[in-house]
Picture (cartoon, rainbow, N blue to C red):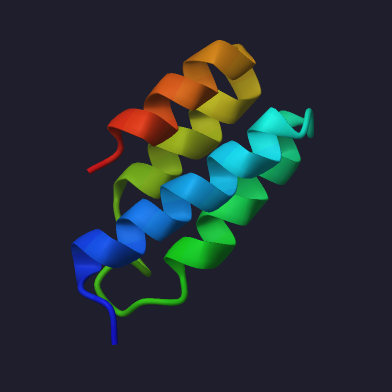
Length: 71
């Protein structure tokens, strides 16, 4: 099993790949959340709720920064 940090990096890479493909913010966020839920140490990360709010109110540039900075 991957460590939490390794898994988190995979989550970020997947979401950013979807973002770079030009998908909408809902698809980007769905990719990120789906992958986050596949590891016991990231499944209930409290910042996932913040990202949902960001998705509804901010730009894709803001979404990219949020995902890149996610810890």
